[in-house]
Image (cartoon, rainbow, N blue to C red):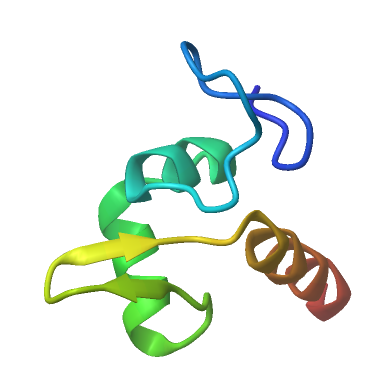
Length: 72
């Protein structure tokens, strides 16, 4: 499993500051479509890079996981 804070996607040399939609969905073990829905609803913040580029901060993903745990 992809650890949000320590592991790297294959082929990268440094820890990414931002993750692609594909990387973030894989890390959360959800589909990209579900991630888009969570982003659109505001549940998970995203960094917009132009009209189509979207990236995710691993710390935001961790915060979303922690909040989901607390909702129980």
